[in-house]
Amino acid sequence: MLTTISSLIPFSIIILSGYLLTKSSYLDHKGAEAISKLTFNIAVPILLFVSIANAQIPSFIRWQYIFSFYVPVTLLFLTGVLIAKFLFNFDIKKQAVYAVCCTYSNTTIVGIPLCIEILGTQSLIPLFVLMYLQNIILFSLGLLTAERDAFDVKILHRSLGNILLQVIKSPIMLSVILGMIVNISHIPIPYSLEKSLALFAQTGVPLALFVLGTTLSRFHLSDDISSVLVAVLIKNILLPCCVFILAYSVFNLEPLWAATATLAASMPIGISGYIFSEKYKAWEKGAASSVLVSTIVSVFSMPILLSLFGIL
Image (cartoon, rainbow, N blue to C red):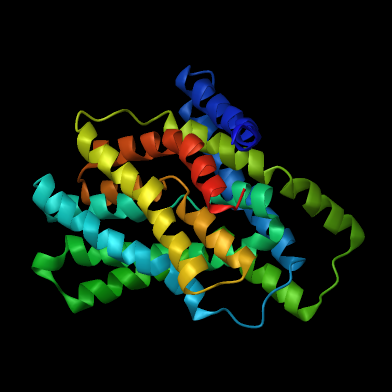
């Protein structure tokens, strides 16, 4: 257990350095934003391109893999809606935001570095499958929940179309598609270019962690701490436990894919939960607090759970 926690200390130090440098104003908002653009428009896409271009891509993806992750996500999303409605008396927009925060995993900023460190670059293929579907599924559920009193099929289609378009146009998605094309087509990459890309790819992990720290520096604890703690409990503990049971005991997935699904589920609440709250101007302080608290708690919850599950 201590070995597992100590292996995550370097990651925590990088996150903390980003947090402290921004919090102390040594790094201003414009500087942090520039680093974030460099990270998610260039460094992380190059990392994904290089990794997927050299990975062993499976001929097919078992539907059980997707079910093992998104059945628990959907059920806990609905649980989050009910808790928000009956326990905390939230209105429908707050219910939607709360449920998204209960189930949205930080598969990019935290997920990519940890999957590479714990499971190796080969885990990026199954991780990407979950990353690709996460925005589509969770934002769709959130949209349906928030707009259920004024449901309009045209608005739904337009909103889902915008979500899908954003996913497809993102540099991360495009880099994965290019990596798969190079991999499947066996297109040779010139040696000098390959070495340059490999060097740049090495910056992706530390930059992503640093950017997480700079982002967390903007968040503050909400007065509504009880609802935040329940959301963190659902996301950090219940979701990975449910995914582990389905992946290993029910569907008997291949070890790498089962471990990737479980590891992804154990990630802290993603920053997109807060972005979703800003979209509806609902539970913004709570969403920000949930991201912050969930990330701190994950430093301890992830090693404990993954050790109990036999993944670490």
